[in-house]
Length: 214
Ligand code: AMP
Image (cartoon, rainbow, N blue to C red):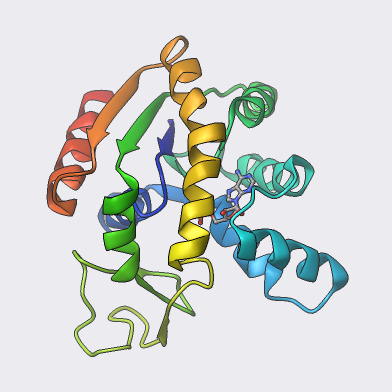
């Protein structure tokens, strides 16, 4: 089962994925996290990648494609949540081909819809564990300030979680990712999640969608 989580930054995709992994055995692939890990290195390639991430631009398809290929090679027959990837129609088409190679396909898309204002309110409160990448924010709070509940790692802010970069990421989202919703709706079940309400409400809606699919 391959479920795509679509939506603007901080619309609740990652928190939803995290909740399921913790309790229900789903496997999550976040291209954004995989890219951040790669960008942390010192090589010229890492530096090039870090420059894309810092500006909130999509990295070239080829840099993401091989990450996805490796991921699906290992996990295509499991319960998979794709957190924020594919990001546009051309990536979705390429991913369909990869999945076909492994005799698999997208099961459904969950579209987390949120305004830029809501996205910014969540991002302002968002921190992430530098070790295990667990997300904390308006909904999930650390028991000890600045320390991850799960692994004791330090909680940090993402470098691209600033108001200026969010503005650019939002434009990229509107231009690249929103058309993907319409593309997906013509081919696969698409569930609409109103993420402008409370984070709890978005989680509930998303869980209901999954219960229909499972
Ligand atoms: P995210 O963690 O999903 O917010 O993504 C963080 C950043 O990683 C984005 O702003 C892009 O620079 C990059 N990124 C994530 N997923 C993709 C993708 N599928 N294609 C290209 N760039 C991506």
